[in-house]
Length: 352
Image (cartoon, rainbow, N blue to C red):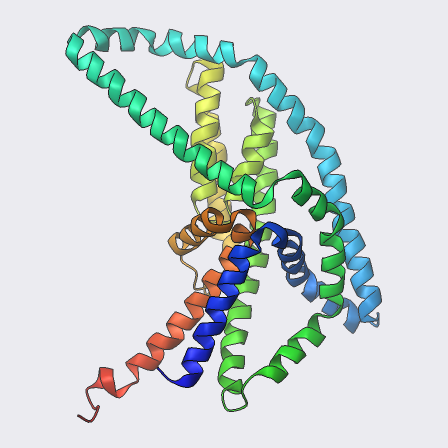
């Protein structure tokens, strides 16, 4: 390995170590950086219209967080009411499922021996305990990494300040980092950074708009047809749509199960299936091609792995950094593979 390669590897290792060690205090700064990156094109557009960078940043930041506050104030009471209503109807769901599947379970039990029943109960208890433990570990990791009271307060008060300053000085920071690049490799690094920016801007900004549109569609549709907890399920399905297919499949299973437990018939689950099928058709044929494009270069499985790994390692901070890190890794791997395919080692022309 060359000296420059060792230097870059050391920089990456130190950055990863700092993120891991400081993950408990990084949340408002990383969230502010993500928001600033997301809003930078809007600031550039306002600058072309004649506004100063500071005024553009102030207008955008205030508008952005005001809209978030209004949306939260509007949605929170509705979500709270649906959760309370859901908890109060849990006995009804249980009774409906017992009426529907009770005879089938009884018939199955009559065909099993006492020893088979004991083994089945033991296996179910063991797997249920393992799944519950895994779920608690994941939730605990996320909570420990980012949802403590102090972190929530830091998001409310520190994140807007970080977003404002980063958005105002974004071009200055980019120019400063560019001035630090080794001169003999600057053009190569700039080329890779442009590719990373194109990948991130296409995926993050485009997929975020897709998530908002799908979340609004699923939440509204499920609430209109009368699915209990429809608003919450729809919003979560939209949020999970950040990973292609995950939001649609997860929302469909949860909403259909809720609809069946709610009514005990297949009519409402069928309507739910139509809603999610319509959302998927619109997403795959219109939203994703128009807003995200087909040259992003981030495979859904790669994005899913990055999100799960980031969340498990450093909680919410890891979730926020997962897609940028996945984009950087993808671009560098493609560049390295292209260089390898052009190298004497691959072509068989290396001198021995």
